[in-house]
Image (cartoon, rainbow, N blue to C red; front, side, top):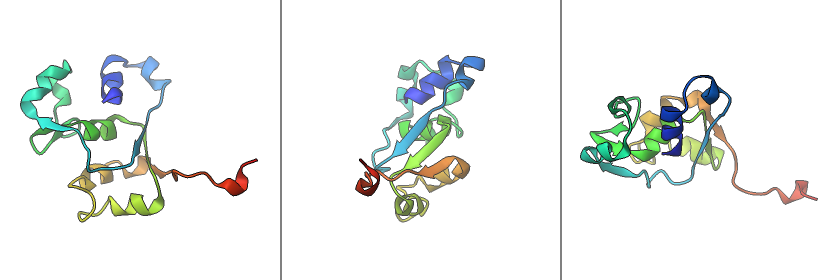
Length: 116
């Protein structure tokens, strides 16, 4: 949600100098709340839309992060492919695919062969 607030509060040239990265580890934990809770965010109502936090009529914090982040990283190439399928996406595949050009796989391990 931080990136949603950053986008809402810091606009224009100041926002263009900072870039955001969202790393997906477990798409099962999306931070989904009833739509009635949106007013508690103090965000402009326009943010509760298909290209924002709205997800099947509810508020989805992970979707907000996905839609407003400049880049999304995945923990592996396999994970990146899996979560684009209906079977493994927890209904999130369309959201991920909507900005596929910003997805990168950044493995969450250390390559000990290259460390000194």
